[in-house]
Image (cartoon, rainbow, N blue to C red; front, side, top):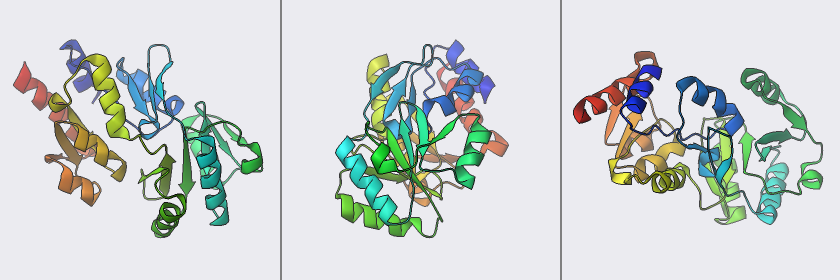
Length: 243
């Protein structure tokens, strides 16, 4: 994969990462791949310059909406992960937060009462739960919050909440405009529900085998998974057709 990315960069073709992760979590992978183009993070709520770490775009959740969402989650029995200024906060540590902190090598800060603590607009909120139960929570939040948030699933056990105007697709559009790229000429790859808007925005969308069924239905093509370097092979094929 790194080789395919390096080849694209040598050819002067931008490589744009679009992820649901916080930037500090994505940064080691971006740096390892040598990517210097803007990085779409937080499901599109932020775009970051990997050269200096500055935020080129940031659209957090309005504070009143965020507080209403946190209250709804708490009432439903969920203590969300809260992301503020590229830091992760929780009411108290769980097995998930400890594992995430250890795996990503980033701090996760306990703050106690989330509603009493939350005084700044969060970039996103995440509810962690049983994949079989999150659809019920999602339906409850959609009814309770009435379109004031963008809801998506990144992984089966993660329900993510962000500003209603952002998605990976809007993040890609921002970067394309900044770099002077035509969206119709962009090839996008994805594997989850949170990639639907990304593939819809790009001129050509590729779903990785085993992806969310809605994504596969939307995609123009599929490619093998990471164990077979499917994305790298597709990048090489595109480059071969251009160069």
